[in-house]
Length: 176
Image (tube, rainbow, N blue to C red; front, top):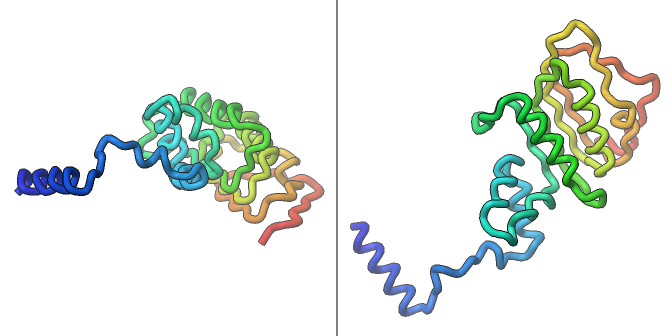
C-alpha cells in the first residue's frame, strides 16, 4: 500500500514536473510567514531559526509572544526560562509592535523581571495582554506604572492569586 502511494507520488513528480526539493515555505510572502510564526508558541517559533540561515532571525518578527513557564514542552530550568524570556524581549527591534503577550509565570522572586518584561511589552505597543501569575509570598505585587497608562492596550486579562498594588492613576484609553 505504501509502495503504491510512493510510486504514485513519483509518477506525479515526473508527469507534473513538481520538484519535491523546492522550499515552498520560504517562498511565501513575509507577511504569511510572520502570521504562521505568530500563531506558534514562542519557543516553537524560535526553533524555526534552526531551519536555515535565512530563517535564523525570522522569529523576531512575530507579533504574538506566548511564554509559559509550565508548558509541557518547557523542559527548561527556571533560570533558563527567565533568561529565555529576557532574550526574547531584548532581541526585538524597537519598531516591532506586539499584538499579544501571554505570560504564564510563577513570580516568586522575579517581580523585577516581570516588570521589565511588561515595560518592554508596553514599549512595543502591546495591544492584548494576558498574565497568568502565581505568587508565593504574602507581599503585594506591584506591576509597573507604565502598564496602567499604556495607550495601545485594548485588552488586559490578569489571572493571579496575588495581592496587586495598583497605582493611584489608571488610564486605559483604548480598552474594549
